[in-house]
Length: 163
Image (cartoon, helix red, strand yellow):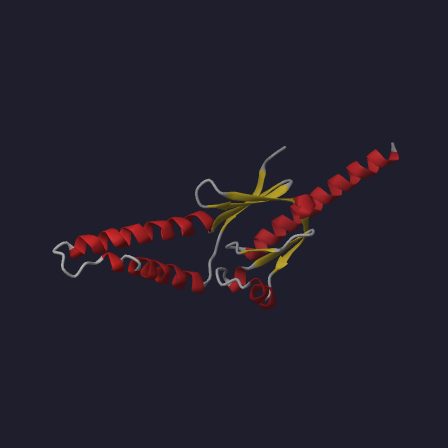
């Protein structure tokens, strides 16, 4: 059965709130070469330059930032902007725990709120760092669903081995 056990939204850190306006400002500066000093249409060129630069940067942030986290009975789904999402099956998750400052430094993650960061380690792959709004509740539900899934699959494999 495929049902949602828990749903949470993202909480971003201070640096992301600073990074987006700065990125948009520098994107707007990309339109500066379009300014012609001899033209009576300078303001039009500036507006066009800003639009041309800001729209792709905004779309990039909209498309890659995590929006919410869904815990199903057999997987974790990280929903990003638009049609983009990542699914992490439970069979690839080793552990899920609070991320420490060292984890965030190692991942060079400035996007996430330090007090809400969660580290998910996976078999033979790089760990994932996410930032649910309610870390304790999220970890409680994820670890419970993960342990239930592992118990259910261990019983199923033991039954198959005994046959």
